[in-house]
Length: 75
Image (cartoon, rainbow, N blue to C red):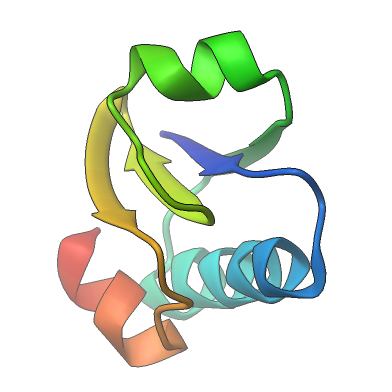
């Protein structure tokens, strides 16, 4: 499973990345966390506000920091 964090690397992006890592561990899933900071790549997902969360190439959240529990449900 590949989880991508879309954003510039701001505090919210970092927090979302940490929550995604914790959610994958709690769910017992092997996941690679990838940070995408290139604005062209971010725009290709149709994301209008960061941070964004992409799970296996599907944009599942944008513009907010999901909790560990919310991310677990998406996994």
